[in-house]
Image 1 (tube, rainbow, N blue to C red):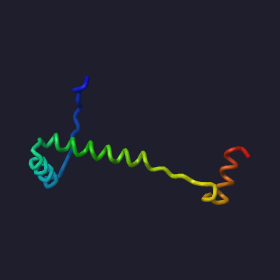
Image 2 (image 1 turned 135 degrees about the horizontal axis):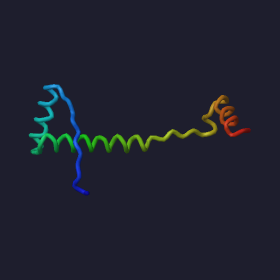
Image 3 (image 1 turned 135 degrees about the vertical axis):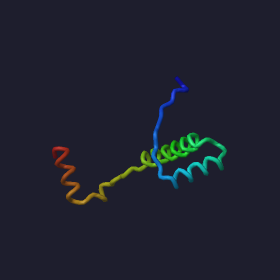
Image 4 (image 1 turned 120 degrees about the horizontal axis):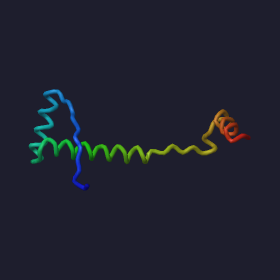
Length: 76
């Protein structure tokens, strides 16, 4: 089902709705298409950014307490 879709209802204050409608008009698309394209694109960016965030600790960056905890967790 490549064409299947689902609904998403969003509540906006009147000013926000006016801005969204104007942006859609300037983009020559419907409000639904505008919201869909902007929201999905932003969601993709946020997911990609979250997946790329990695915290790497090197042995020299660990405090004595962290090293002791690591040893305890490894059963040393």
